[in-house]
Every structure is written in structure tokens, then in C-alpha cells.
Length: 612
Image 1 (cartoon, rainbow, N blue to C red):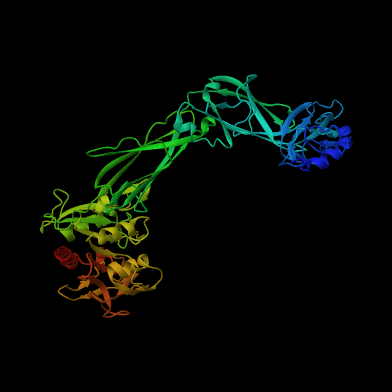
Image 2 (cartoon, rainbow, N blue to C red):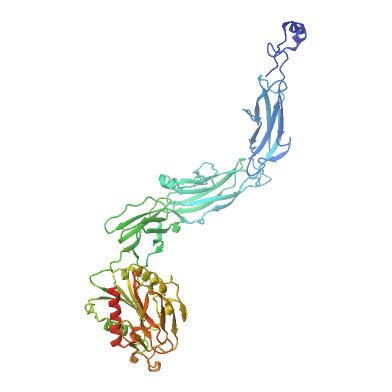
């Protein structure tokens, strides 16, 4: 605001002769307006040489201010190398370009003179007649490309959906722009992004998944089939342009992406190797696929799934991640299919995961079904090491069936499972497909070589799930306790398989040949070793036989006869009313007993298991 006269008329008249020579610029103004003054306070020193940027993050900031002793400064005319702009600010970030290469200094540019002029203007429109001026020189280094970053080498055969980037350095870093040429034709503008993804930009589901803040999407139409040269250059904010880096490639469109794996879990557990699983209410089935376009240096963009059941099917899901989930699938057979696609939109052939979700049907079945699991490893057929035929023949006599109709005198339908040859992918195990309709499982290991009831990868889980659903188990064989725990003297916790399902709290093994007979209890008869089935040197007795300590709600049905465990439980029955399952566990191999005694023993055990 200017000082305006408010003196009385008489005083004004007395002063008028004195003021007439002053020639005020504004009629009625008592004093003449004085122009403002301008000063540059931050800028390169006069005639000095500077980088065009002072740090990697920001441009050089020039600061100035103006002063008007009889008014206010309303703004400034800022002039940089001949270009003027009006501003009310007191500073500015200015890039002083110097793009002219220095022929005597590779990688540098010639110093270029720059002049900054700032002229303040006051609220009467009067400008500083002597603007603040600073003249200096700016220099710049040319950026250098350090690496063409890609997973393909020069001369590689690639698909159109490739990606790559460039890394660079700058001795006086600022910011930079990158540009891509294909066969000498620029296919992008100068862009701050240093990474490129060739993709099907006409498909929004593909284009929108590009991290556009960091990656420049380029349409695959720019990479038709054939040989091409990719060229990249970098330009810094000072206008200096790097040398180019190039890569020769050959583009093909005949190699689709491939699916390499599809795995699945059910309620957090793996399906069995044959694709089966026992049904559980509200269980989540999760799938995870793995695909590859590595053969042509592409990348997988997304996956989709569909489920084909026995009665209905689902549509393909939208393209998404490698994982997919279904909840509470009803019992039945299913085929899960998955496809993957690359960044061009090329789709793989489906990969299939077949699975069977089984609801047990053995409880209350009209025809009682028995599964005989035979672990005989086909020994030499001599006493002490029966071959598979000998073991099978003995058990057919014990249960009373033949291979003509597989029905016992009691009406039990028997299925045999030879554990050694019952494999999927080289893994021997039992699965829900073997167990789901069997009222009783008789599992024996009459061959001394190995016992896999607990050793097989899925056996503990399969039998546990079978028993949880009300299954019945008769277990016998060589060294049973060793395979239920570890060592010669065992203590089983309540939560272990033995403590929970067999209801034994511990046991001991006889390492010498001292097992020869048992004494029956609860309606079971005595048992004796058949000396004709063991070598003469064994004197009619076996080693590695066990006694078990029964827990609450379990009882001994056979006790050891003779040293060292006379009167202790050699066979334990668990028929606790608190549980769905029923089990009988024998610490000896039944094959080596007298057939006349083992037959009524096993048949009575099976009858009790079926009846309870």
C-alpha cells in the first residue's frame, strides 16, 4: 500500500511549490513511487562450473527475494536463458541442461553458459530496473548402461511375452528416462520406467496386472514371429543420452506354456497317492498348480480351474492365482482340471487331478466284509521264513474261504491285499479305497523280514481314520511292538496310536527264543507254536514276541506261558464303549501257531469284532 496524502488543504497549499518538481507517478500521491529491489540468495557462483543437479534426488534450487521500501512486492519475472515466466514464489528447482558431448572427455558434456535473471515487481506495477542476475556454467556426465537384464541370452529363441529391464549408472545422477527400439523403430516414448513386459494389452485381465508404476507394458504385436533387434538407451534429466545396448532374438509362437504339477490337500492333509480320502464335513480341498513357459523364456501370468463331478461340473474360474479352493465337496469321484496362460494369453493343455472322496459304508453292512492285509515278503519257503503262497494258504484255512467265491462259512466276504505289490508310484500303503467298506481289517506280518503297519508313509493315518469312523482291526505279526514305538521296552502315551486305538500303555519284547505258548482267557483257547513251521534249531519257540500292558477298558485274552513273561498279556482286546473302534492286538505271528488252535482263535476274534 502506498502512502497517500491526508494533510489539510492549507498545509498542502504551502507545500505545493516544494512538491511540483517531484513529479509523482500517481496523481494525488504525496511522494514518488520507488522501484523494488531484487536479490538472488541461492544460486551457483558467478562464472563457476557446476553439475546440472546437486543430488540424486532433487534439482538445483535457486532462491531470491525482493524488497520495496514504499510498498509490497507482488511477484517476479524469472528469466532463465532467455525464457521468462511470472511467479509469486521465492525459489524454483531448475535443471540446467548441458547435452553437448565433450569430444575431449568421453562420457562428459561441454560446459554450457546459463543466466538467471530475477526482476521484482511492486504493487504499483513498477519493476526493478536492475534485475538480479547470475551467470554460471553447467556440465553433465552421460549416463552409462551397465546391463541388459533378462533371463534370455543374445540369439535366444523366445516367445512374444518376454520381459526385461535395463540397469544404468550416472556419475552425476538425477533421474532418467528409458526408450526402447525394435529393429531401429522406437516403440516407446522416453519413459521413467526401466522395465518392460511384452503382453497382450488388448486383454484387460492381463494388462491391468502389470505393475504399471514400475513396468512399462508393450503390446506383443510389436514382436511378431521372426528375428528382431531390441535396443535400449537411457537419457538423464539433463538431456544427456547413453550409448545403446542391443540384443538379437528370434520370436516364435509355436510353444504354449506347460503345466508341470498339480497338488491337492484335503482339510490340510495330502490326498492319498491314489487320490482317495475319507469324507469330512466342511473340509476344504485346496489345489496348487505349477506351470512354466521357460522353454521360450516366457512367464506364467495366471491359472484357472474347473471341477468335473459324477453328476455336475463347474465352469472355469476367472484367471487368477496358482491356488484354488473348494469347500465341503460331497462324497464322490471328481476330476479337477487346471490350465495356465502366459503373458501373451497362450493357454496350456489341461492338467488333471483325479480324486475320490469316500463316505465309509462298513458299519451295519448286511454282508460282513474282511480285508486281509498280508505283509509276507515271499521268504524262501523253509521253516521260519514262509513264502507268500504258504502264508496265503494258512490264512485261507484259518478264515475258512477259498479263491472260488471268497466267502467264509460264517458268511464273511474276504478281500486279500498283498502289501508288497499293492503300490502306487512305488509306494506300498493302504488307502481309504481299500478300507471304506471293510467291517474288519486283519493285518498280519508272518514274514520276519519287515513289518510296515507303522512304517508305510500313509498306513498310520489310513488305519487311524478308518478306526475313527468305527472300523475294527485285528493286528498280529513279528515284532509288533517295535513297529508301534521304539526299542525293546516301550511306554505309550494316551495320545499315541497304541495308547488311543489299541489301549496299551506299554510293552516288552523277548529277544531270545522263549515264546512257545499262551493261555487263553475270556472264552479264548490256549495257543501253541507248531514246531513243524520253525527250524529245528529254534526248539519250537520264537523270538521278538511281545507282551503288552493293557490300559483302562482293555483286557488280556491271551497270556504268555513260561519265562520271562509268564501270565502277562500276549493278546489285548480293546472294546471300550467310549470309542467307535474295536481292536485286538497280538504280540506274536499267527502263522506259526497250530492251525487247529489258530483257526478258532482268529474266528472268535473276528466274530467279536463284528458283533461289537
